[in-house]
Image 1: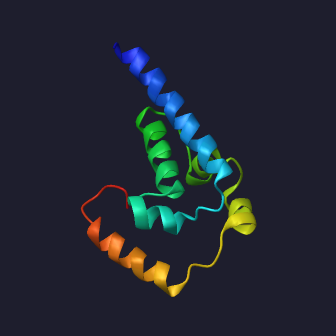
Image 2: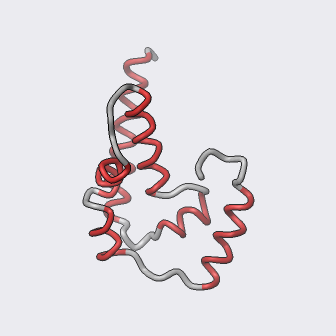
Length: 104
């Protein structure tokens, strides 16, 4: 497979991931962090970093709007729920396990 085709496939997979996440607003970022070590905010940061590395100026809010499909504050108001003590404790444990990971 050539590099251009690989890039097209990766981009298509990323768009599908964003579409899937837009339908799964019930899945909270803390749930994603606890299970996978990354969340929507991580995806938006990686997107911003990739843009900036290519000389495209992009701020955090713009990158988050791309990933969330709406302004982050709107998403939080509409979909974010309060994380209970059990999820917060699991997050602390997961975060500690991923300290060397670049998803922080």
